[in-house]
Length: 109
Image (cartoon, rainbow, N blue to C red):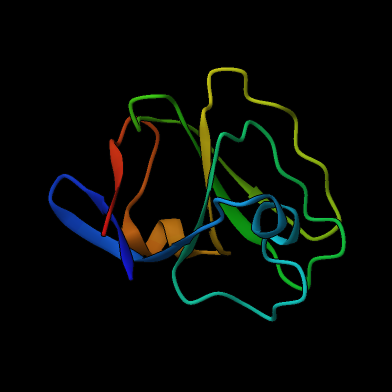
């Protein structure tokens, strides 16, 4: 199991969508997620066909959060050109975790 960590503080457990099939599927077909999904090498996401709204954090190459957005269902996000990866979590998760722009996020095994 992997963990999403910032400033030595564990935010949540997480999954990483590293292969093509996992990236394509993302959170589709789920009714929610208990943690987060990390999408490496990603600059934009959509919620077309999703069953729930998500919080999305765009990370630069060093793991700094450059943008966060709340995406309702059936939306297409705009690309964030500085982003190199994306973290998706259930709506309201970032508020509970205290995650915001400028935080440095890392994935720990």
